Length: 540
Image (tube, rainbow, N blue to C red; front, top):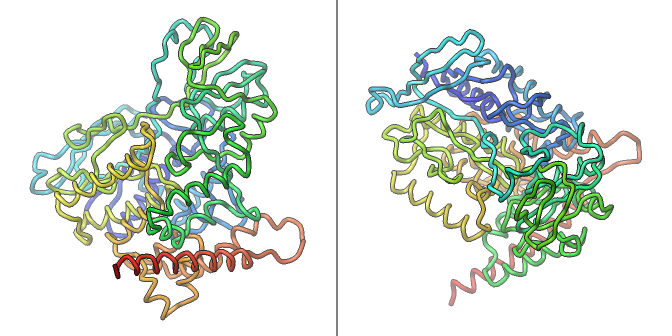
């Protein structure tokens, strides 16, 4: 009899969890508290407490080729950067293609997850759920649990002096849907993450004035980079990751200044009152194509942190005061946690959690529970969630082994230390991961990391494309368990799918070849320089 796995949530991580269970011969039962798949990307007009939801106008920050599941490319007809309706449509296509929906119990709330009485022998879990349609409660036993609830649920509302006296409207960005009802208002938005920037830009088109309040500023990136190509497809490359990982410490400030100068070429962050006191690599960047234009138009003003509220206005930390404020929007992020899970298993404090690869609680006698997607990647989350699911399901079956508890704790400490050294201290910088390096760690445990040196002898064109081209998710299906025969073709045609929706008028052939040649030459020269420097260090 197949082992039964409880999958909590049918969003971006939950769907691929079901698929990975089926790939390994496990029996998944997915519990979804709403009536639809999609999680965060299932837009609803009404606010649901504890249920994250995108704005009506939200467009994803990662390009379609970088965010898709590794064995199911997004159709070439879809836009390069998809509106949330396209993202949800893709999830439905994925679920229908692999027959995932029949494994989902909709309108079912998970109340409690705890170790079964015989956990030390069986590793089983007692899961209590309630059918919200008939309010019937059940206690079920599962051989494994995959928690796929994400980290955008419980609103983080900072304490501000005088907020209780403010007579205007106070909301969290979690509750913001669209600009209706905000026409002609004077609005203060607190927080300068992606949500804060998106809300500020949208409201600035209808409001009387928008003030965007920030404690430390932010670096702002475009979705589109050189020659109009997607930024993530140009930057998320194995060769680039190698350079950043191996560049000598002497040259690191030069690289950081180079990145800073490149961002300031688009617009001077200091001139626009946005420049932080840290380098761009020390924080999770804001992706926003329109904010500089809205600042230049005067419809958005950047202000320091809010110090105090009055009945009708706010004082900022620089002593300035704005009167007749109608709305305060808190774009201050979320406190993540797992209220249905016994705290002896996972206890989240100030958004910090101790888990191996951000998924396995190292103290469990039996590793039959994993958290999926509780990460903040510099890149798309879907491919990483998929890799986590592939690893977890194989661990549940004993097909993949994890290091000892001591080694897992050592890895957790090293990641925490590295994060503290790299990023400015913030509640949002507790689960940061780099897309390529973290994916490599998971691939090694799964056994699906390609050997590119060997591949240079057997398939040199594919090897060079993988190393110097975009690290698209298809690379994780070239070899190893549950590899996909279509992976090579998907990699070969990734730029074709990217360009296809842009070809709405015949202007001749458009290719990325000239740019690729320049990038290849540039990276090879730097890599040779690094190898030479490392060799000299070894000699002496």
